[in-house]
Amino acid sequence: TLNLLILLLVQQELTNTARFALWKVEEPLSFFLTQTPYDEAYFTAIHHPEKQLEFGASRYLAAQLSQQASKALIHKHPNRMPYFTQLGLQVSLSHTHGLVAAIVSADYPVGIDVEKINERMLRIRKRFIHDVELPMHLPESEEQQIARCWCIKEAVFKWLQESNITFITDFVIEKWEHEAATVKISTPKTRQQVVVQSALWMDYAYAYCFEAHR
Image 1: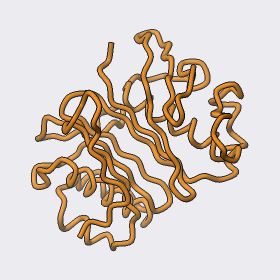
Image 2: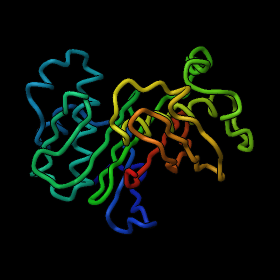
Image 3: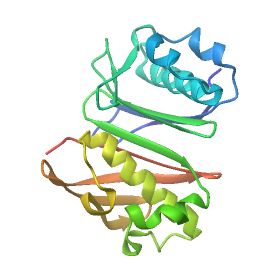
Image 4: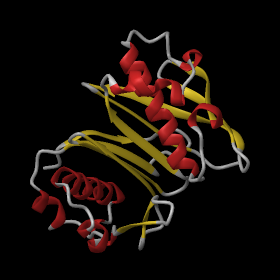
């Protein structure tokens, strides 16, 4: 049986066309690699056992979400963004400290990020976020709020797929509606807003977005 923490059909404008999931990795690497097509050349270049496991688990999860697992081979563009080589689906992946995340959509670009909540966020916060962007309305610790914001901006970065992005200036969280953030994008190529969903689970934060580029 699938060890899914979350398997959610997104039921907004994309009813039944987008899925995302988180997976707490407890299985051995062989479990994932024997059931999922994968980029062998890319995998061979990974030497750290934990990174190998996250590679296999994230691709297995994306394959399950695609509902066409035997065809769900993922490669990476030169910009390092993943894509299905045989399926007409959008895909985004993330992994951190034993937790992997994936989102797929038949219609719109997608982005997802998951992070372990820790004190490192306090040290790097000034690089990517202004204090006014924090979700002060949520009853969370400073580390949790910062991790949530990092995930939101990272999810937007993956969704947008542009290079030379500076999080603190190019992506600005303009408003919050409970756990959903409206992010203003200001890059040489893009001027628009996108809504990003976010949440906490145990000592992790995650965020995802799916929307048409305008």
